[in-house]
Image (cartoon, rainbow, N blue to C red; front, side, top):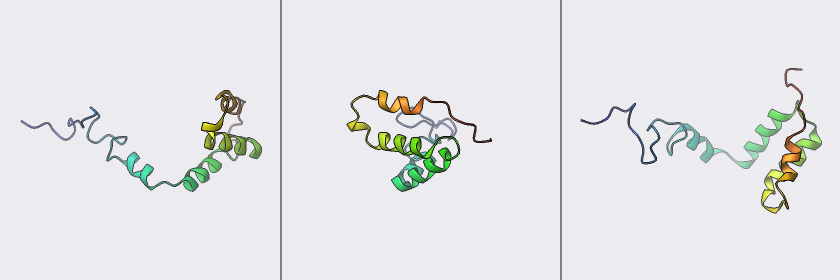
Length: 87
């Protein structure tokens, strides 16, 4: 007896239809997404809740994370209070 599609698992143990699986929607999105797409989405999502200077500093820190002396530099940028996007 073969398992139903709903119960089928991949080699990693995830359901065969898992969006995060190797052939799921997430994997497809990641494969098609460019750095420019990610930067654009980040800018749109943070535009009204943090300042442009902070936006740029976070982007610079994330893109250069391998050159940071201490990850605390990035976490310090991420921890200040943000404004509600609904305001």
